[in-house]
Amino acid sequence: MNCKQFNIIPLEEVLLSLGYLPTKQNEKEAWYLNPFSSESEASFKINKNLNYWYLFSEGIGGNNTDFMKKYLNAPINEVLVWAESQNFSSFHNQNIQNQKLENLTKPYEIFEVKEIQHPALLEYLESRKIENQIDFLDEIHYLMNDKNYFGIGFKNDSGGYEIRNKYSKICLGKKDITSIKNGSDNVKIFEGFFDFLSFKNLKNELGKEPSDYLISNSVSMISNIKNSLKDYENIELYFDNDEAGNRAVEMIKSENENVEDCRGLYSGFKDLNDWLVHQNLSNERQVRYGRR
Image 1 (cartoon, helix red, strand yellow):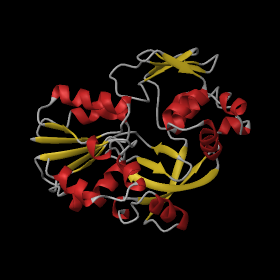
Image 2 (image 1 turned 30 degrees about the vertical axis):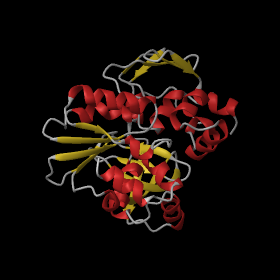
Image 3 (image 1 turned 90 degrees about the vertical axis):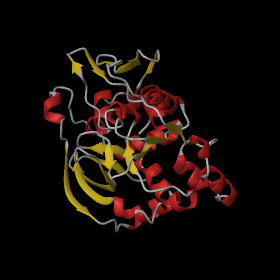
Image 4 (image 1 turned 120 degrees about the vertical axis):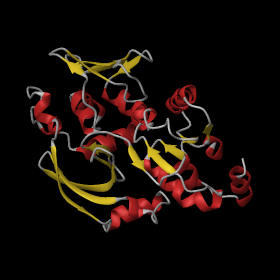
């Protein structure tokens, strides 16, 4: 697949593959909540005729490749590898543009959920340095557009699955946060489940006590997390080191007390998992951070 081929795929289908549905739409346009950040009112607009998007809250827009470069934070060659792996129905000359969205709310079928066994998935987890945290994960086999796929599945509070493998980053089912309760007065919040699992690997070295955990699975779900924080005495934040992460931190800090931005642990890296993958951990740094 090249850029021209990817850009003629309906952006609605691209967003659907990522787990996003419009808040409202008509024949000419569709409106979505910001896929890059958290917001309560939809400001992401698709012009269906032009197949272009515009994000009013940030004043940016473009075509499919522009969207996925920003969404994946990846160069164009990686975007095209991702696009090829999705097997978009419209790329294979299946006309979905005349179908109503209601008929696409579940364009997949999960036919097997089991313990992670596939060598490719085990190798992928090892590359992300979380191969010993498979108790939180499942191996998901699913059918989409008449083709079989498989990936690592992380379940959310609505029964949906965040699906990941080397080439795929989608949500099957309703997009939602994941809550892990341990009866604690403290909670740690992570943007993605790879960061949560990375923390689980580091917990003992960091000297952190048991706590509850909230995984947003996307900064667009921050509004769901905000409603779950009122009963916690201490809140630790482990968001990405980017503008969306900055906004999420400020939003939570503005509405809650006793909030700690813990991104200093992995400053200079995209997120906690990125730091874990690239670093030989320094005992001195771990102890110093754990005592803050």
